[in-house]
Amino acid sequence: MAAVSVHKFAECITCHAWSPDQSMLALCPNNNEVHIYKQLEQDKWERIHVLQKHDQIVSGIDWSSKSNKIVTVSHDRNSYVWNQESTEWVPTLVILRLNRAALCVQWSPKENKFAVGSGAKTVCICYYEQENNWWVSKLIRKRHDSSVTSVAWHPNNIYLATTSTDGKCRVFSTFIKGVDTREGTGSSSDAKFGEQIIQLDLSFCWAFGVKWSPSGNTLAYAGHNSMIYFVDEVGPSPLAQSVAFRDLPLRDVLYISERVVIGVGYDCSPMVFVADERGLWGFLRFLGERKPAAPSATSSSQFSEAFGKFYGQSKYGSSNDTVQPSRRRAGVHENCINCILPLNKTGDSTITRFSTSGLDGKVVIWDLQKEEDLSEYL
Image (cartoon, rainbow, N blue to C red):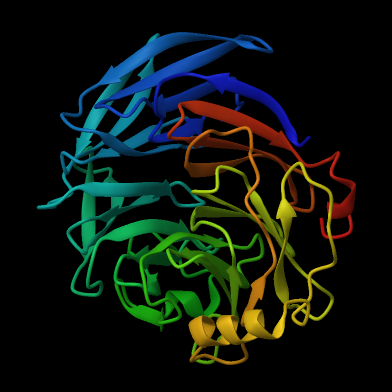
């Protein structure tokens, strides 16, 4: 079994984040508070802080790995950056200028910016203004037709991918003069702030959980129609693949390596997707189960192929439109998994441990080192 530890912290968890050394865990128990726990022993955690500043449900948390800052966003339309001073966490208000709820947040790779997605069809790019000693935001407006459900930074610290309930995935430039440098960023620094690099119309329903691969060459996101989309060569001529599966939709995804993606959602168990030697993606299995068969673009029945083509036609480049055979399994989680985060990386940027949290109030830590059939993809 890939799950190595299971911890019940609340009746329901909205989101969670880990400290840089992973000795502390911040989570929202589906209210306006952020609880910080410290690990005393392997299976014993103690709540050491309660961050109380928001007025409504905290919808996003991210803990920076370099500066040890916590950023939170909430349905109250506000964001706070928390700094640890002595034994207390001190909040600094970030003016987002939103008229709808803030839904998601993520620090950039260099941690000099963070992005906030909102129900106002707007993305806020926030950065610290040293002269005035405060956090300010620049808005990417009039690009989305509905709520922004997730954001993901490209490794170059400039490109930002978003998904929305308008069914589209978009990539924007977030280059800010005086904050970002043009050295080593290539053509990504040529685009102005807020310029749309690409818009992907692969999904005809809500889209969630966008992530970049470790190299930044591929991105993946999920649709509410039980499909996952993979896009290579993001730019004027992208190559897209659509993989449909016979299980409940995903809410979030995570690249374990360039060839392995873990998806989590309403089926309560992490799902493994892998790319074969040809670069074709397919569903492998649920975690904790043995590999039933090698994923293949031709492994499904004629009905499955027709179903996949009907729902998964892509407008961009080649497409691997199949319905991968699978069926629901009972897992460690007892309700929808809404968040997945990496825990450790090896020297080649392969993630071997990650955590999930869900509406059942559990945080589960998973270890892939014992999953022998995944070793060839890692």
